[in-house]
Length: 360
Image (cartoon, one colour):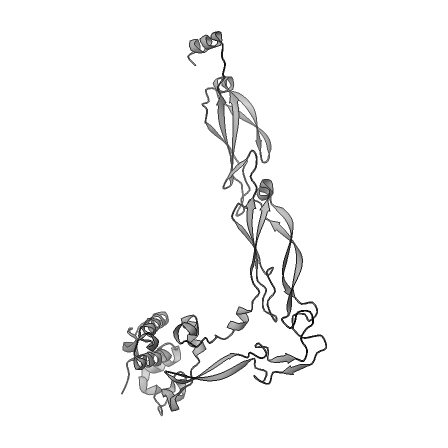
């Protein structure tokens, strides 16, 4: 009897590959036996997805129906997923399903690994450090030398793990493949899975003597010094990522990265607002009333600022392009100068009369 795989997954015949994948994922969770679902329904869902999830098999199914994949049919060898469960043993690879589910342990409880996962997991660890800068170092950029400890590639065995001159033998447990095959009994029958060989850690070879410096791991702890260029305009809380400067990976895998989190010491005069600089200048009562030119310190050096007559306390003036250089793109921020008028205290009677006469 022909099976409607589209109906089983609850999708239309024009469904995209992503829609089919999402539908299978949802229904597989719903009908998983470990969650109280129906084992037969779960098996049926897997069968449907093995066909519709493969472009070539889906095309054949659309042309000939499920008969193309039944045992003895013209496409029986093409159904490499469940193949009718001959003799109770499925020939599909749960690691491929694991790619979709993000880890077999969550769905099937096996704890299997996807192809290449072991190598990726052996990637060197990322490192994080706090780098404190002076205010003007962050503004204009600086080159710093930092010292820290991390795992580096063993210089004695060059990361191979074997003592120099040691004999190298092919692993007898995996026959040099780096992976071993197991058959496990599941609700779907006997399932064949492949995993990293625990005896050679997936290397396919075994040294007669481990490296005396790193103990066979290929890495060891050491102190390193590194010169780091900090870009101009970097701000508090931002980070610099140094690719490959983290800890060394095992047995030839990639090194991790180093992240430098920036902390900036405050300045006694300048306050940073993004790419702008904020300062305050105190002017006298007469300067505010009559106007004047005052000298203002900026991060680029002193400049003259014109104070118009009648300036009120708290007025802010903008000095164009006297701020922080921008990390992305060209140009720089401005400097915002807030003026505070100093009101004279301890005026004598005559001075008060003059101010009253002037209406000030």
